Structure formats: structure tokens, C-alpha cells
Image (cartoon, rainbow, N blue to C red; front, side, top):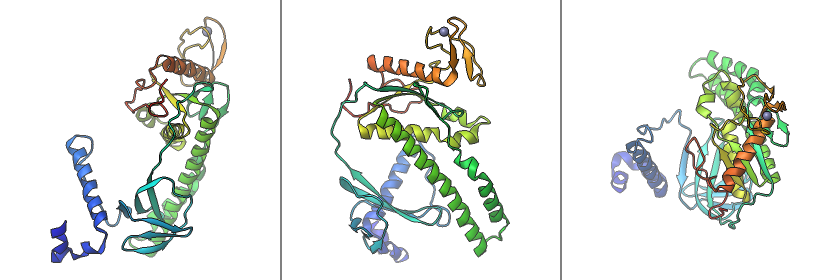
Length: 329
Ligand SMILES: [Zn+2]
């Protein structure tokens, strides 16, 4: 890097912060390591036109006051600071999104008290497309259909974009408008998911939930509804919020037959996806499909917690940790 900087062809390298350049090299190193370990594809060059602009600063980005941040080699920049920084700042990324807005993302290290998650108010949750979440208590929440709602507008904007002459100013504007419409839907969805996940985490201390077959579901004809519901984002949020609030998420393997087992007599029946309500052939209880599944997931989750197996139980291979490290029971 030092030699390149002295090279007459690469004098422009001196215009940016040395640490950002080193960070880029470290990112490349990570990419290569991942490639040789067969975890990722061969790293690609960034495109000046297509890749969103971003740069990373391992230190020295500072919040000056409520409306200003200071960035090395750039100086004071006006900013909207939407929440105060907590903990020790470990670096910052400055990036531009598709709508053209610039963002500063801080990485902070925060010490949290180590609390053992309790199991006094457990909940079983069945997730799906018909009803987004069904609690074992019978509370059902409809999936938000933000994409479906905005589809008409998106279509119109996409059509305008494709009709505009390539390279024209109108095309640039059309692209911007489409990106904004997408962003709006993303924002609405994220807001809804955050609120819904937080509500569950605040109400309950142990959340039992089924692991999802994300890839399998995304391939079906329900794919659009599925990605609109953003179930996997929701699961991730639940997990993060649980960790933050000292709660626990127990994942029940998806091969556990939660839907077709009667929660009263544990007898299995044959169900199709369209059977929303069914009657148990053995004890003749009338079941709501989702509520019955939620009760089964709760029972299985509690069993896993009691057996101390809540960490190893996961089908997808994603790490299931107790809500706080060292807080195992
Ligand atoms: Zn039964």
C-alpha cells in the first residue's frame, strides 16, 4: 500500500484516510479467506456505477453535537443523529443507499449485565402465511402485506423507468423514484416487524418457535407472499431482541410434527395445507390448525429447555445460543 501510494499512477490513493484503505485490504483478505474455505464465491471488483458507495473508518468518526459529525479528511458533516451512541465506538461505515441518501453506521461495544433467562412466562409461536404469528394463547396476527399494497405503484414506476431513454436525465429520475418506492415499503415492513417482535419479547420470557425451511418455502408459488412477510427477518429480530432483553428463544426443529399432532392425545393425523380446522379422530377435539401447532411448539420447547437441549436443537444449522452467554439453566 505504501509503495502504491508513492507510485505516480496511484497518487489519488493519498486523498483518503490510510485506515480506510487498510480496512479495504482487510475486507479483501476476509473475502479471499472465505473463497478458499469454500464459503463464498471469488471476490468481484466493485462497480463504480452499480455498487452503492461505501467506505469504512476503523476510528476517528465522531459525533460532535446534535447535528454534526466529524469524518477524517472530510471534516464536519451535517447529520441527523437519530439516537445517541452507547458504549465504546469501534468504527463507522459511511454508505449511500439506492435512494441516494447517505448513512453513517456505528459499531459499538456495549457491556450488558449477564442475566439468566427465566421460564416463567413461556410462549409457543406458530409462524405462517395465513396468520403471521399465532400464539398458543390463541392470539393471531395477520401478515402485513406492504409489498402487495404497493405493487401497483411499483409496477407503474418500473414501467416508466424501462420506457425512459437510456442515459437520460429522466431515466435517472425514474430510477430514483422507483428506488424510493421500494425503500418506503422496506421501511414500513421493518417498522412493523420491529414493533411486533418487541411486543412478543416484552410480554414473554421464553419464546418457543419453529425453525423455518426458508429455501423450500421461497421456491413455492407462495414465494412472493413469503418474502413479503419476511419471516426470516422476523426470526432474526426476535433472536436479537431476546439477547438484548435477557430473554430466550428456543427453536423447535421443523421436522417436529407440530401441525398434525393433536395436543391433547398426541395422536397424529394426515393434513393438507388447506386444512385450517380439523377434528382429532381419537379424542374428537376440534382444532384450529395454527393454535394447535403453537401449543405443540410450546410443549416441545419447554421439554427442550428442561432437557437442557435448547442449544443443540436446530435443523438449519444456525447457532442457537441461550439468550445470554453463561445464562444457561
Ligand atoms: Zn386428539
